[in-house]
Length: 464
Image 1 (cartoon, helix red, strand yellow):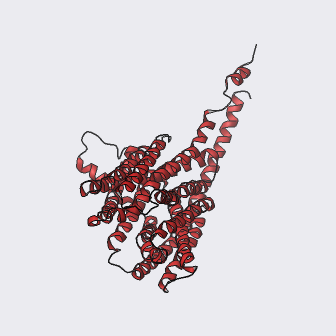
Image 2: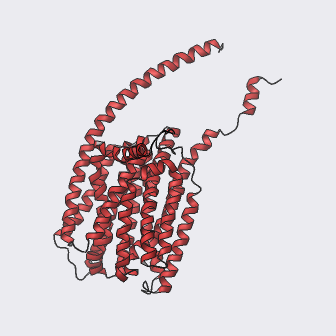
Image 3: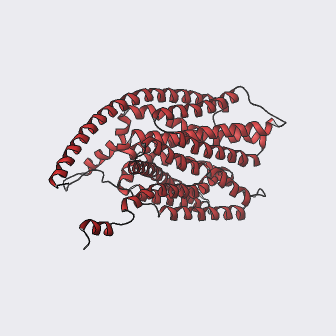
């Protein structure tokens, strides 16, 4: 007759369910990164063409300005929406705005582009807050399940995501170049085929997102009862929006967030027009943006792997800031190449350095918010998109009224302020972190002692 222990061993599964669940975290990161690549290789390339394809009445430029204003407004309220929907549902729903925007480009009129731009602002706000929340939640779960350092996993996951996403500039521009290779970007046939291909890419990205695992982060805004009034609901909503701004850490990060938006808009609105086009011509813009995207992707992957905590984030951001500052000073000193090899190499070199800086900011800002604001991830990532999109909108609206030199000086000033704020944040956060570590260590030692004593008593009682 088999003993009880033998029967327990026979009934025990060869692979525990906990072990199977551990694999899902990295799987979800692969799916999320691939899905965003398909969606944004289409949208990114379409945005680059928007001002040249839809020129009548400046429809393309005005549509983009409306888009980023809408993005800014809806980002203020994206946090409670994502909390209610859950991060997975938010990213899936968010893709519908990008799909509609591309579809509107098949029949570009004021009646199609403006509503599509407004709706895309809403969709973009929830997809990006959902993305940041989902990725951070997956990283924290992976670190907990596998007994890994949380900051390192957050950095690694963000590195993979932003590295994949940054490559959309390279892939999307190649698709545009292949379809519009004869310079027919204004022709109806060429643009119709291009945007149809983009719609197919977005559809594939949306389907991929449906295979993401659900995360347990869907929450009601606040416990309510039948007597709760609409006024009380608005107050609770306002608290969710304003609370992150009452945190000194967020106030110190906001300049860096605003700078990240300014430098992204500078590349697409000023750098390509004032530096690349005069030296390489209009066809060279696609090549320069491909170089920018390639360096952005490589740097995102590398920076993510090197991230381990607040100290590593500080020096990685500093390296990216120095490289971009070199480009700005170069431009202020009167960059002008009219012939020779330098006419090709220097603009591409600048594009590569700017791409490295963008890759650094993307990975490190998201990792920083994930590490510091685990208790309110939705609110933190909503603030990220509020300030980024507001900065981008400002550049789109004023780029016709400001000189290259004035724009570069503004970027340098904001960069210096943001780096100073980041250094102050490092000092404050490390003091707080060290105090928390001391408290947690003491609590853990007391808990471990209690567990050990209880275990011994239990073993004696069972006659073990």
